[in-house]
Length: 389
Image (cartoon, rainbow, N blue to C red):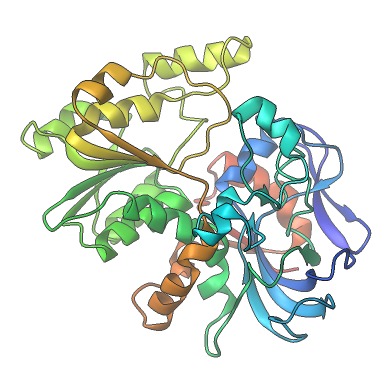
């Protein structure tokens, strides 16, 4: 089959690889009908995430048609259309039983590696390094899905691939970001990053009752898309974000702040982000947490900082004094996608949201390597790439 494979920093190739096979009775094989490039994939493209091996298959936003099921899988049958969560979860362990599927204790066979780095292991993820299971990803013609009776959700008749594909990751992640904010009537929610997850968080905040959403970015196309949803947009290269948010909130700060950027914040944003970049380049630091620092300072006393942008290891110069003395609450996670799937599928069916609004580029797998570069460099108005193998 054809697949997009990783061969080093900025080296993604479309090449022939062996077809996946059933390895466990709970597995299923799907024929991929749509997959996407996620902002998190860019961390792999940029060489930020350790334990990627040459030839690893990329991708964790995937859906398709079931073509084979293992003998122990009673949920799925050949011919079912399904969306596959990026988190791989057994459904039986301590965390899965409590709805924390992204903390699954059984799905990461490489847990000893990541435990040395993070103290414990989250769930295995599709296409996201040998720290998180070494599973082949879904930017391919076929995908093996472990624990397929737990993760995939069947797609109701009448919904297109593009309407439901993002249930695999960015829609639940953006929704969770807003859900973490405990939104009350009249609330102002500030969101850093108007990429795909940020766009979902903007619309989710409004769905959950926010009165006002402030969206921070600098890419014109992203800001325009945020504004079309009703957000008040701020360009961080044109104005001081802290001063502007304080002005808009009469000196109080936003009720909750969402970091939808993560480790690779724009180094042109401020002096501290430039220092972060120098530290990373000289191996004196691992992440660039400028956005998180700013979100903390812009959050009102006893507000919430919601973090869904990906960070890798250690963060420098985080203003914990501000957070502690002003009573901030931090909420963060890899998204337990399975927890949100039924709720969000229902919202799509009711017409409350059509997640396909975020798609700007449609392509084949062969176009994938070049579109990684286009997406990374924010060229050609690229916000979200969908590929149809």
